[in-house]
Length: 568
Image 1 (cartoon, helix red, strand yellow):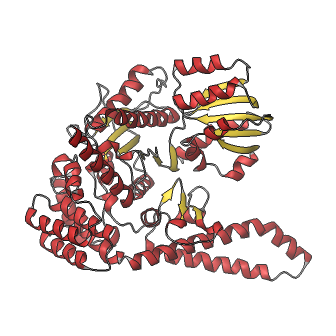
Image 2 (cartoon, helix red, strand yellow; image 1 turned 30 degrees about the vertical axis):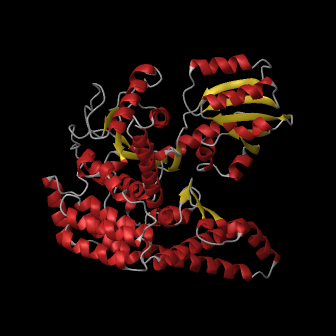
Image 3 (cartoon, rainbow, N blue to C red; image 1 turned 180 degrees about the vertical axis):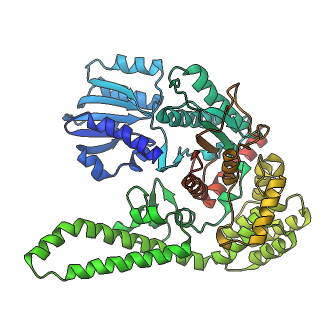
């Protein structure tokens, strides 16, 4: 519960201590930060009668002196200017300013100078500068997520903005946890090194007083890694509930928009999938698709029992009982129809795109050797009319990542076949992926074939057989957590920043993936935490990926790189 609780505590403190009718003013980032941990009905209970965006408040001139304005925004120069203009002619009775990260002195001076009417009652820093989508998983929702793939010379200023936002988010995480970490990073990634060093500079030099919590326990670890160390995980189809919904439909800030995949009634178009607000989802978010069907059947049966007993109203007492239980009944009805709709729609997509066959080939490519059989399987699927363009592209990418050194001739044949079967994909996208995340670029043992221990483990797994062919893949993050738990994370692969080394095994580790996380990885972290190994892992990233978003980022980076090189 750690991340969600931290953000919720901050918001509670903001809203509880200020009595009376309130307007909550957010920006495009903090709207996501608040919406994943707080529902509208909870806001109403705290006497928040209006929620507005900082931009739209700036356009309105209507005076509302009976309302107290609570600002919760990021400390950007744009937001400071918006507030400055508001304070020049205040519309609200009181102003309470909360910022999601560290304010600098210049910004404080601007606010102080702007408050001529003395309308500002308080200015505070509440370090909730991240979207806590699950208890151990956060994202920064950075729109220009492709920036991490670009060399600094191509777009220096935007890359700097990207790095600044990541450092801000990491600072907020550790200020919220009240800890200062020892920092390590992925050796082969320039952007991971840069972010790790800038975070170290902020925590140990520029703001060392703020991060000095005078705690005696072992320092936590911040490990900054690069999505390109494991490009396989975001390319795979998913078969566990939360990950599958994101892959096939899409989840944004714990909301699912069914408008992307078909026509639905207004009340069914946007669904909330939150482990905090939905007990069925919490219990089943990491379960396999086959088991979900059984769980939903049980839920429908339970609901039908409740519905049947509600039909049997004969006395006034029965009626009163029904009215008392009605909100719960409505909620149960909404939940049943939500999950039935989702699973029905996903089953249709699985059937249409022949994902059972496609996914079996993907898992073989990701987990097992055998280049000849893999080439034959991918060729057959490229020739299959039922397989969609995006699935063809992903299969060729997975083959290329695995066998780029072993079979260049067959790889060229697959490139040519892909170009003829799926002309909408730009030529060179698979080659661009290899340039970005090929064997020579990666830190770590992605396929478990570099390290003797990993080779032995894979052989043992092969002999034992796998429980489920569709979920046999383990992301690189799983290996990293295993290495940390056993005290075997190699310094040569993941060097330390500065001279702050780990004295003993940490009890808390934040793994941050530049380029974005996946729900397969957040599941891996949640399951690892459930084993009570003595280490609590938290996963964060610049975005939450599915294969569509990963490919979009790749295409955008390729386009900018081409434009940049033609200019140079």
